[in-house]
Length: 206
Image (cartoon, rainbow, N blue to C red; front, top):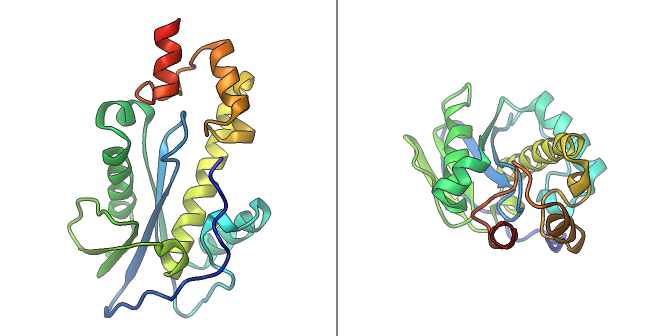
């Protein structure tokens, strides 16, 4: 599982943009299974949401609460994915950029500026800027991180129903000891990323 980040919020990111601003973030780059999920969110300045933060420092219950509030109050929310097949074909970085691009393209409103968590940008037709640690510095990116994380966790719950032997509902596809043991014991299921070393090694061994 990924380590929990410090809950201390760094200095807010300042940007100068007139018009709608979308925040973009992803969930699921590190797991061995399942799609990578990205979200794009345009918040409503007239309907502020208290408690927005990097999804990784929030409890699952709090993420679910904020997920519903973001959905209710944001001007628009869009989710994009890249499948396991796309991850294996393109590599995880390019698949992540593809999921982010799909999320932005899916927005009902056209943003004037897109702020993306991290240090890389997807190919977009609108102005965009990468923001390191943006998920804890920009409210719209924090909101996107929550939407992406909750959406992906729900997908992992569905994976668990289809392949309960792997425990996807617990580790969410990350390479925990229990997941690696299940992978060795049962082999890879169709949702495992063949291009990731632990999965590839099991397939080669079998």
